[in-house]
Amino acid sequence: MEDRSVIDRFLYSGSQKIQTSERLYIRTPRLSDWAAWASIRSSSRDFLTPWEPTWPADSLTKTNFKARLRQYARDAREDRGVAFFIFRRADDKLVGSITLSNIRRGVAQTGTIGYWIGEGYARNGYMFEALSLLLPALFDQYALRRVEAACVPENKPSASLLRKVGFTEEGYAREYLCINGRWRDHLLFAMIKGEKIGQE
Image (cartoon, rainbow, N blue to C red; front, side, top):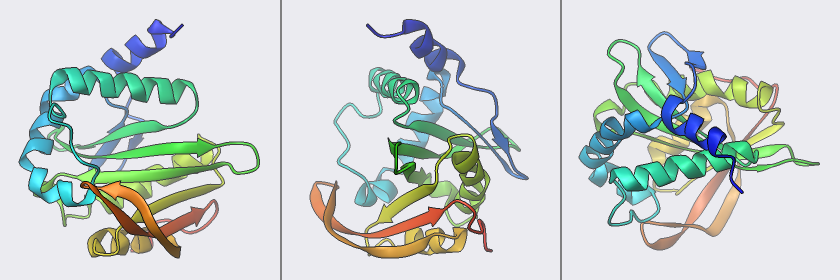
């Protein structure tokens, strides 16, 4: 039986601004973010779809967003992952998202991050700032020893971002994830707790 209070709290209240930088703040998403989320995802569709799993036909509906938040709540409750939305402090505009998933405890203490930014906000250093802000919390508050990330080799901006933030390229995985309807090879990156973050 699901803990409805936990899920409802996630859906409707989100969390406090868990991290704040000069230009941004980061918090978990809430149901009231749907319109802003759907708008930025819609306007950035052509920019994002080459690098993401295939979007379902109803991907931008409020019903789909609510189901997405319920899954985020389950993942957070079961210590499998957590999602964060990135907002610009100057005007509270949603600019992107970072998701921590596939948390492995025991002898691993590892999780995987994914991220996206709206097309209109790309190339402004926002994702660099957001990752530099969030990674210390992932290591400390979520007690991770290692954070992993991956991108397709053609996504040079993403690979460059990860290197600049401080990730080390560790390998090449064949047909690692199904992206935009095709099984794609990926570059594999990781950061270990204690390594320098944000080497700009």
